[in-house]
Length: 67
Image (cartoon, rainbow, N blue to C red):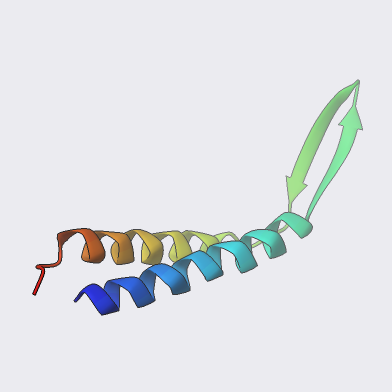
């Protein structure tokens, strides 16, 4: 279980980095009366899924029994 947790943790972190950069590049910002307003056209679902996978991997690593 510890190896599965490590794999999930690594995949989740890579997904967070990749999809996070992609999502941040798909957002635009403009200024209205001196206030910057950000408009996001990005799909945040892959970022959320990657975060969940990362958390599951971390939990599996922490709570797996040592052999």
